[in-house]
Amino acid sequence: MPTSHSLENSQIFISFTHKQAPPNPMAAAAPPPPPSAAPEPSMAAPETTPIGHPVFTRIRLATPSDVPFIHKLIHQMAVFERLAHLCSATESSLSSNLFLSPPFHSFTIFLLELSSSPIPPLLSPSPSFTPIEKTFNFDIPVNDPEKDAFSIYYGDQQVIIGGFVLFFPNYSTFLGKPGFYVEDLFVRECYRRKGFGKMLLSAVAKQAVKMGYGRVEWVVLDWNVNAITFYEQMGAKVLPEWRICRLTGDALQAYQNANV
Amino acid sequence: MPTSHSLENSQIFISFTHKQAPPNPMAAAAPPPPPSAAPEPSMAAPETTPIGHPVFTRIRLATPSDVPFIHKLIHQMAVFERLAHLCSATESSLSSNLFLSPPFHSFTIFLLELSSSPIPPLLSPSPSFTPIEKTFNFDIPVNDPEKDAFSIYYGDQQVIIGGFVLFFPNYSTFLGKPGFYVEDLFVRECYRRKGFGKMLLSAVAKQAVKMGYGRVEWVVLDWNVNAITFYEQMGAKVLPEWRICRLTGDALQAYQNANV
Image 1 (cartoon, one colour):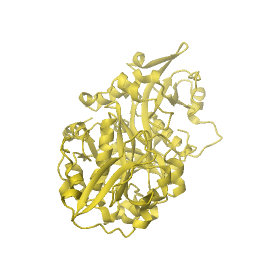
Image 2 (image 1 turned 120 degrees about the horizontal axis):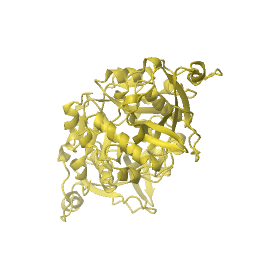
Image 3 (image 1 turned 90 degrees about the horizontal axis):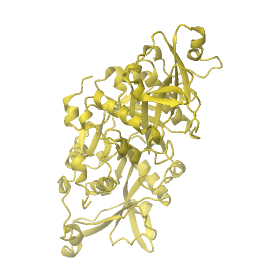
Image 4 (image 1 turned 180 degrees about the vertical axis):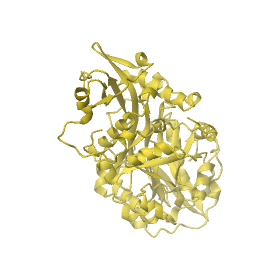
C-alpha cells in the first residue's frame, strides 16, 4: 500500500484504515436488508454445509484489560501504513486516556472476536451494549500466523482478536444533535475481505441510530477508490470540498502561553 | 458568500465558518508571541489613546442559560451559509444534548462577550476554565444592529454576545491521546475582521495545550483561500488528500435493524 510522501511531510497521523479492507463483493448491498424472521443464512451455514469452515464472531466493547491487544493493533496499523515512526502510542498512554467515561459518551472501542467454536457469553457484560454475534462459513480455513499474540481465553476456549473500531461522539450544530466519528477501523491482514470491516462499521452505525444520533462520519484518502466504493455501497457520501486543518506539534505548543 | 450547489446536494451540514472571518491583517503573525512581562498593548490602549473606542472582551464557557443565544447564533450561521433550510436545531434539541458532561470532556462552547466597559467578574465561575479577557481599541465604534437580541445584563451592565466556538474531544490512536475538534466557529457579522475569530480559536488551542492534548482539528472548504491563509498563519496545516465520509439520513436509519 503506497504511502504518499506528502502524507509524511504533513505529519498525517490519521489512520482510518478501511483502505486495507477493500470491498467485499459478497457484502455489496446497501442499505442493509430489513430484519427478517427467517434464520440468518450465515448462522445456518455450519449446519447446512458441514464441510465448510465456520467462524463464530462477536463484536463487544473493549475494556481496560484489552489495552495490550489494542496497542498491538494500532502498531500493526501504523506499520501497514508505513507510518510506524509516527506512532507514539504506548500501552500506558492508551490506558491513561481511554475508558475514562461510560461507553459511547467518549472514546469507545469495539473489538472483533473470532473463534472456530461458539464464543462463550461474557461474564461481565456491559449494560450499555449487547454484543453482536454472527457466524460465517468459509470454504477455506483462515490461517492466522499471529493467533497466539491475539488470543483471549474464556475458560479453555481460545478466542482471537481480529480487529477493532475506535469512535467517539461528535456534534452537528445544524442537526442540533450528536453523531459518531470513526477514527480508526482496522482488521488484521488475514481476516480482510471477509466482511468483518463492514460488520464493525455497521455496528457503529446501528449504535448511532439506537442513540438517536444524526450522523456517522470518518475520513478516507481521495485516491483510495476501493475504500470509497465500499463506503458508498454502505450508504455514505464523500464530501468533495472539505479539507481537514490540523494544528499540532510545536505549532500547537506555541499557544501554551499565548495571549489570545 | 457562495454556497456551492454540490454542497446542498450532498446534504452538507458542516458549518465551520471561519470562512466568514477572513484574515485579520493585524493578526497575521504565527506562532503567537511568547508571554511578556510588559503590559499588553491592547490593554493599555484605552488609557493611551482616549479618543479611541475600547472594546472589552471576554471568552467564557457557555452555560445552559446561554442556549437561546447559541440557537440564534447557529441560525445566523446557517442563514449566512444559505443553508437555513438544513438547520433543524432548536433550543430544545440543544438543551437536551449540550452541557451533559463537564466542560472539555464532551461538547463544549466558548462564548465571546463584548462591552464598551470592563466586564464584571462571573458570579459563578467554572472551576474548569478561567475566562480570557482582552481589550481592543478601535478607531471606529462598532455598530451592532442586533445588540438587544444578544445582550446579557450583569447587574446594570449590558454585555453583548459576539460569537462562539463549539468543540469537543477527538482521539488520535497514533499519538495515543486526545485532541480537540472544532465543529463551529462563528463571529457575528459586525464583529468580523477584528481578531475575534482568532481569539476564539486560540483559546481552544491554548486549552488543548493545557490539557496535554496532541492536536486541534477542524475543516475548511477547499476554495476558501482566505480562510486557509488565516489558518496557516495560525500554524495549522491543511491535509490535502483526506475526504470526509458521511452516513446520515435514511442511509443511516437503514442500519436500525441491520443484521451487521
